[in-house]
Amino acid sequence: FGGGVSAVVRLRTTGNVSFNVSPAANFAGSITRRATVKIIVKIGENVRVFRKAISIGKNSSRKSNSIYHTRGIKERYKVINLVNKTDFSYIFEVDDCGIIKIFKILRKKHSKFINLLQREFEVLSLLNHPGIPRVQPDGYLSWKDETNKELHGFVMDKVDGINLEERLNQQSQQAITEERAIDWLKQLLNILDYIHQQGYIHRDIKPSNIILKNNGQIVLIDFNTCRAVSET
Image (cartoon, rainbow, N blue to C red; front, side):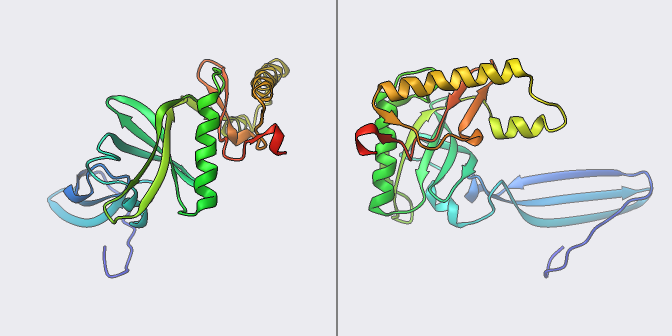
């Protein structure tokens, strides 16, 4: 419990164990929080108390904390959770005045990547299909964080469900039925047909970019490599 030494405690008798976790105030609202864990182990008349400062969250890196602060992004979007992290962006789940949405924030400040992000937002704002995430006209944001670092990102509706890559992994011991596979394929072709009619090509079709909603509907995501037909 400190000094670089880790310990594994195994209890081979009946006892009561209680935990008290108190996140530190200066990390409130962050994905990664510092907390002091108090562990009380009682075995018969013997009582031992352990305390340990730990990080709680999906990403323990202090670097990512500079993306947002306790007031929320632009004093509106409160970060709830880090959903995904790629070489291109961070994907956050945020609270927008009580409505849960997805916030895609660029990781690298470079004109090339900024242009890609802006184009993705512009394409999504022009598309209107139930199989494509929706964005609002004022959904693209640029701002400076508490360290004066310039950031770019945009907000889109949250799609509840899991991607097909995860779904297929869940079915590793059980094959997907032909009927279900055909239904997914038909939905995907319908979405792609609509995108092509609008003059765009997605260019990154893969299971991890296809969300299966709880009601069985397919949604295609991640338009950062999307191109106009005239550009290809």
